[in-house]
Image (cartoon, rainbow over all chains, first blue to last red; front, side):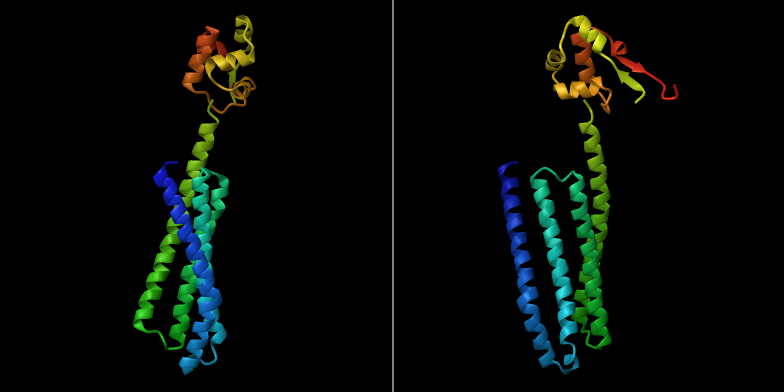
Length: 161
Length: 70
């Protein structure tokens, strides 16, 4: 591994850990504050504190799971073990999490729509976010099959004497 | 595997130990044992060439096809 690759790995991992910590902070501190703020500011959300908290926590937690999966995959690349069976489950976790994120964003959209409080800007953000998450999920699934083929090829090559 | 690798006769004829042969053809003893016990999935042309060179034989002297139906 050359210097640029090592620096990229360290910088990437550090940033991902930072994002992960920020996700934790958002889930533990910002979401409860924001949800109680929404409940007190807008009367239409007066009885929806728990729902709002749940709807905001869900994408944050799934996002943290995505970051964790990427971190572990990065570590596998760094340790030269990406072409192994252990990488499958993390790629699968990444894919499932991306679909989960799309689902959670769509849920937020439907809930806001059911409350007749779905401003166009939020609708665009929710729709874009869901589409990106769905695309990431499908691309990751495709890459998983590619990883499987590459791992099989490596195993076959290792069997050649 | 219907292709049998058998270089033992040639090796004994040359008076080489497995360790010496492995060293001469540039593979590990463990891999030579894998070949010897027919557990190898495939053999490189370079390994076959080195085996033939060190044992002074032809590929046909160490590779045999045995039908699986037999």
